[in-house]
Amino acid sequence: MRERTWRRDAGVGYALAVVLAMACGSVPAPGPVPDAAVEEAALTERARGIHDRVLTIDTHVDIPFDFATAEVDPGVRGDWQVDLPKMIEGGLDAAFFIVYVGQTERTLENYEQAKADAMTKFNAIHRMAEEMYPDRIEIALTADDFERIAAAGKRVAAIGIENGYVIGTDLSLLETYHALGTRYITLAHGGHNDIADSATPRENLGDGESEHDGVSAFGQEVIAEMNRLGIMVDVSHISKSAMLDAVRLSRAPVIASHSSTRVLADHPRNMDDEQLLALRDHGGVIQIVALGAFVSTTAGARDDALRSLRTDFALAPSDGVDFVGLTTVRRAEYERRMAEIDQEWPAADVPMFVDHIDHAVGLIGIDHVGISSDFDGGGGVEGWNDASEAFNVTLELVRRGYTEAEIAQLWGGNLLRVLREGERVAAELQ
Image 1: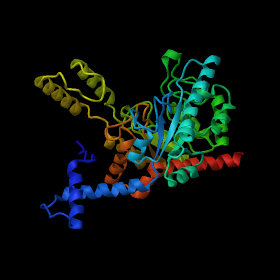
Image 2: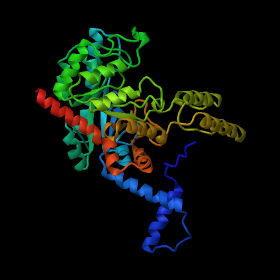
Image 3: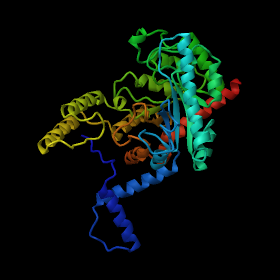
Image 4: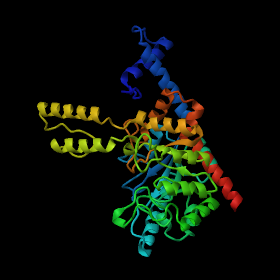
């Protein structure tokens, strides 16, 4: 079993403190410090420097409908996985905040509701950046904006739409959404829509395995208009046929804003090697996502086992464990069964997540791979469960031998290259 040594621990912190104190002559040497601890402390310090210097971009962060209100205040450290304090704590410079509207039956009434729901989230993102915290975060509209805003010491907000369903059949809405700041659109989500087939058809909506055999005729118009406006085409969530169609149809490189690799986790939301190669050949980028079920094939079984365990012990269905009321014997039994679960179904963690980065880099090259979380939309793995833990990803990358230049590409450089290419294509088309 792979040794997981990425977590910072008290021993490493103590070793670093002792070494620094000795160097300053402030304390006597307490005895030899183990070489492994010194090496780990040095590696952690080097990773911290890299993390502080590179521009870190998470391309997929979901928000609730009451975002940027008193109930979900992004300026206060709260229960959600991403807020401004957590971004600062974790050294996360930028995030694409997502306008997500779920798929429903395609009727005129539902199209109007989808558009209204989208506007609720657009308004919330703008309220956060322009009314509530303009001194702490700013919306980026261009690739250059990301670097300018970060250099000014503020967090960067960008906007993506998850599910082209919010367009309905009205192509003119693309221009409206672009003016509001949209810089990528996921063509479909769970369930087919008028643009493209989904990787996960919805039986309750009457979906068959395929509706358009990929991208529809209307979808071709959507992609052409996105190219004209400079909106990146996002191929996460869509079927393999639709993904390959989108790559072929788009004049600009496409992105997969939050997907992992199918060879390591056989999930319909992940990309197989044929898709990854097509993405590379078209100059695109896959943003590997830290969502347990897309990282580990056993994540679902582990979740089921944990729910069963908590039910057996009459514990609330939450991450924490409250042992109040459990006898010593019952607590020991809980811990024994928890250890069995950990052994049979290891939790998806940062090393497993970086395994997907390794596979993608090995297959298609460092220029075509990035990082995403899907926080507040199901994302999170052990060690990167919210924005405050973003450094742990950099630490694992350093541990595996990635250089600072390569880490800068993974954390945002590749994504900005694609965005700039889209801007160039849009300028030509306009």
